[in-house]
Length: 404
View 1 (cartoon, helix red, strand yellow):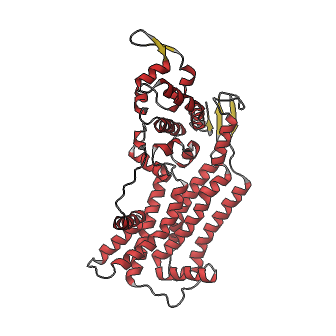
View 2 (spheres, one colour):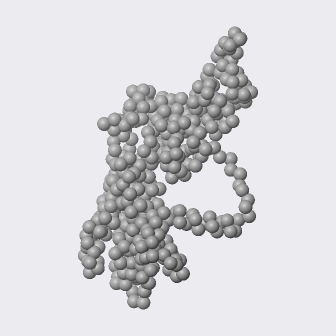
View 3 (tube, helix red, strand yellow):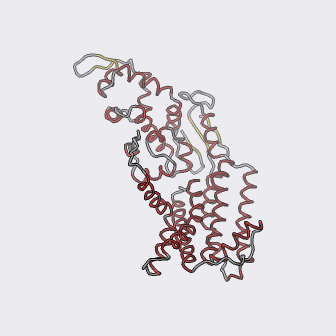
């Protein structure tokens, strides 16, 4: 049995992590000391950094979780087209230090800064905007509010409740994902963006309905809060309205295969894959299984099974369902016919025919066409990778080992 320890952290990554932690601590110090004249409380500064801390925790978990990749083969031996060392390099690309820094630690600092600014927006939007403008103009971190900036009461309400809505949604989403170890780089980056979009869209909503409306103050505040919680939906409604006004009613024809055709992909899994930019079976078929394993809570064997089915559906979309009825669950099974296609099988009438010919007749394909598909899949690098990953038991034991 060959066992290879996957690379983990480096000294440079540790230094970067320490710097980010110090910067986050500096934000709390700035709040408590430089802004205490505003009457704020230290716990508010801590609360503003909580989403960033949760993302940082997940990055550390991925960084230092021990990993061993083990297969019942020599590390240099060809494993159906791929070696253990090649698998090791694939995992190293996704889990090594610089990948975690870019994917998690940098978004952590961005989320800490936006959380800090959001807390200021909730407490005193007038002063917060003055500080931001002063920092941009004079290139300093903290300045008193410039004179002449006056926000209306309705605009302040929109900014404040839009920020609250964004913060509540971000904290709930990240906290819920933390329980499932499902914090992706995209979620961290979007959370930082939402904490900026919340006050902006809240202010836009307040400016829009400030005049000519009969809504009560409480109703307006609820509206601002909802706008901050769902900025994408708010912008989508506005974009759809503009699109319907300007479009020529042309309907685009998209050659797409639904993810719901893949066995095991439920509505919730489909929505989660959408977050990773995978919207149909074609995209899933070409996805990086190791990256999906890192960024989603699903086991690697489950992911490889989905990709295996997706390759089959994207290769022979009209015959995939018929092939599955014949016991061909995915591209790996179909590719195996490259070695057994000439095996003679006795049909129901007692006649002996090549195995591939019987399968072709059952799925309404010509034997030459099915043979071409089998040959192509047997040489496809994605199929080879999926087979190698699927054949190894990718369950992480208490010692952090993946055993065959």
